[in-house]
Amino acid sequence: MKNFDGTIGSIVADDFRTAAVFSKYKIDFCCKGDRTIEQACERKSINIDELKNKLNEIVTDSKNENIDYQSWPLDLLADYIEKTFHRYIREKIPPLSQFLNKVQKVHGERHPELFEIFDLFSKSSNDLLNHLQKEEMILFPFIRNMVHAQITQIPLENAHFGSVENPIRMMMDDHSVEGERFKRISELSKGYTPPPEACNTYKVSFAMLDDFEQKLHKHIHLENNILFPKAIIMEKSMHLS
Image 1: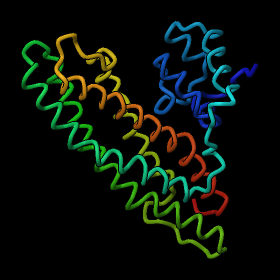
Image 2 (image 1 turned 90 degrees about the vertical axis):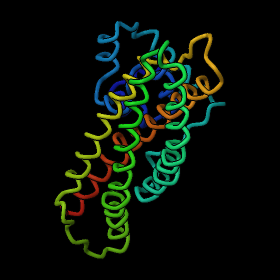
Image 3 (image 1 turned 180 degrees about the vertical axis):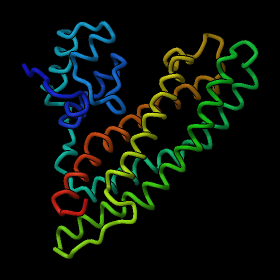
Image 4 (image 1 turned 30 degrees about the vertical axis):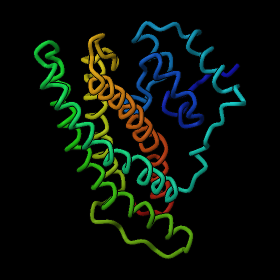
């Protein structure tokens, strides 16, 4: 039996399968991954032994393979995030926005929470697209350059933004904003549960929103808990900060 010491973020970073358990108990492992299990359970009045038992069931299940993102080179991890999660966000925003807009117009009178859900997702969409561009144009290229410099032993000049911690801090602030937005969307939608009379578009919209939040959480986790801390350590090892 593992004790699962350390922060929630580090536990998920070691074994991403544990993310499913934290999600089930509504424990944020990405934006608020700096808490311990004890702190999270106390805040939400969760039985800590029950939670740890569920975590142990996951990590000891040999059928449920775990990807060891911790061992990946930083440039590979940045590529994976960009090609998997950035691409997903850009692909899903247009149809999801269209569906949510339609649903609020048709069902908003009986379910006024749909207006706020659409407004929150619209703001999130705009901010996320800007966020992705900043990562792809500024932060990720610098991380790739650091990896290249470390391999080739070619000196790397300091970036215009100073330490890599500066853009990372900005990205993490963005992550926190999105985490709170989707927490509110989840509350308004009762955990993405459509009402009994919901039409197919209503049901599809909530299912897509649920999947979008799950993908966003994994995206943020890989950056906040693995890519960003390792990039900071790499920069310090190269005496660039």
